[in-house]
Length: 270
Image (cartoon, rainbow, N blue to C red; front, side):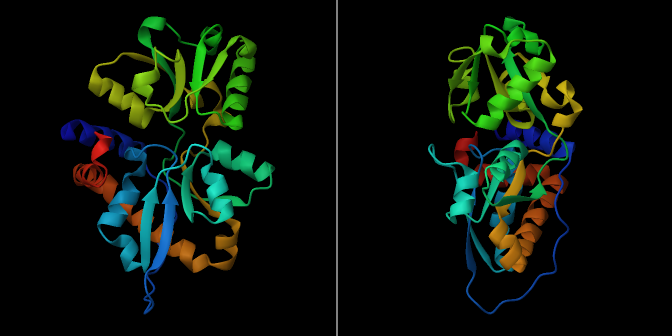
């Protein structure tokens, strides 16, 4: 199992990691500052750099005491950031854009992957190879407004009827448990579920979102924080991003060790 996860991590980091330039380390005589980071989903390879930075004390060297938590069912990462219940979060650019439109004061401060590796996935036996094939099928999603808006835009562009899709909210249900049972197609990150499907020997049809429209090749996932932090505590943001960048750079250079760190930090990941 560990070998499989290491392969998944190596494949993920091969896509490339983007982040801000490391800031100069600043010594502080004060107690480590507590930091709460909320994930966008179950812990997975997209989050490896965070766990590496935590395990190797990169955060501690910056005077930060970081706690990594999972999101709740009834609150978004953006809402947690805006309300001060979390300092940083992993999110999707489309969610950040929508939050900004709604006046929620969050900003992206870093991109984890250089391209959008998300995709619509279905079982190969269902022969769904284009948005037109989504008609009459069940779409399983997490219930975000940007999610349905994006799917509708894609289907409209490909002369497909969005109203013929049955929308089912799955929340954080495991893709491999729900696909084919509760839903016919879902929106996944290929770097996690796509590669895991290959490891499990499950045949999928995947339609990369960035291939459907160049405009959809936006950075995703992204690291976000509040406007307040970026305006009133820039050094705090720089310290966090410096340590986080160091963690992801380590994962690029040492994927096998990084995979071991992720497995040890989150045993359920396998």
